[in-house]
Length: 352
Ligand code: XIL
Image (cartoon, rainbow, N blue to C red):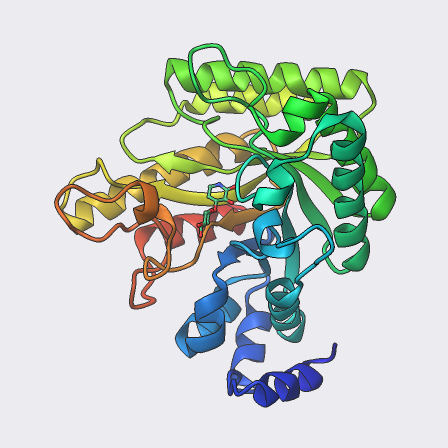
């Protein structure tokens, strides 16, 4: 859809959202060496002009915070509800931004009916049909997909395959199936395996890095078409980044012929000091350490934060602060002012 058509369509929906010119200039000005982007929340995209303006000013690519998850797309087996992704992709294209897709196979955000899938035949048929349909629909318009999200378990010191309806019915082979199907549906798209908890200087994080490398090796040995590893990078603010180990890990991943990217960056600040300056400085430091550890080895294909402003963030759903202060996980504060984290990211993506 052309920009003008979309503005008209949006206007018809009662949304006088875009001011021509101003936003176009901002988007054109922000060409950086490594594409920077953010996850977008559908509600404010429709109602908050300052939010749209911030996305256009800072981002070269966007991904839906929801909308592409099974629970959003597939309320029933026969339905595909594309409202949210269509809105977002129209906004991205109208403003010269690229898209990422999130996500095709995950244990969470599943509609009840899909959790009832039973047996190899039914489960693989549904997974394949879903991926063929959704990736096929956006072929050529979504150049990068989180095909499998959070494959690793998180329930003890031994990191294995995470429980899901996919794993229960298909075992680890669900990963192969998801990637092969996505590859067939869009041969040009970057196919990503995405996970969290890979960055910290903790025994747990170290075990997750090892488990991810083992998984990637098995996938490579089976010729599964994975192109890149996504670091979700929801960084626990109270944990140091293990710069050396992350660099080594990235270099092992690169040695397998894979790219890396940062897909969901933010800093979980529930355990950080209340003082805002101090808190923001620690958050920026964590982000700088992670991006530095990656950049020491390679250029990530993208850096994406999970939201752009502290005004709209998922963090308080799970990590509310005990002192009642609002979380500050993202690069812009709740009034869209740049925080130290934004300056750190800009330096990193500019190749500094
Ligand atoms: C979160 C969204 O941000 C929330 O709005 C939603 O309620 C739950 O999911 N890892 C992921 C993302 O891969 O999909 C999650 O997004 C955050 C953690």
